[in-house]
Amino acid sequence: MESAVIGLGVIVIAWILQVISSWRGKKEIKPSFLLIYALGAALLIIDGYVNDAKYLAILNLIALVGALLVLIKVSSKDSSGFTKKKKR
Image (cartoon, rainbow, N blue to C red; front, top):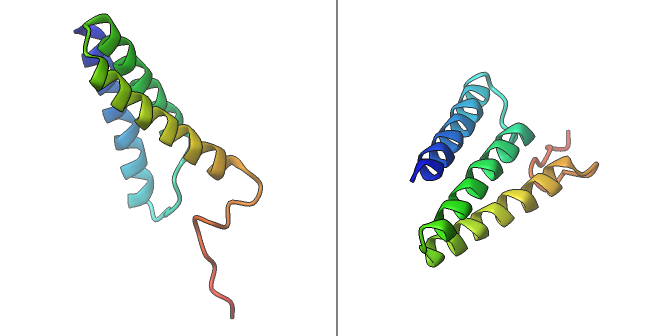
């Protein structure tokens, strides 16, 4: 139970940091958001398996993989797929 609360708390912190960044006018996804979110999802996966909630663990694993895939895309040198610049 404690790892679930900690995991959800970590995810909330990640979202707060991403929202603050977007309020400052930055439209891109922050890599730190994705890393912190992935950490929270990993804690939820651990909690799911410890408490025999295998389906929740699997769903959180899917969320973790999704966050890591987006992190790879955002961290790559060519991340033009996320922000299309208008040609002038």
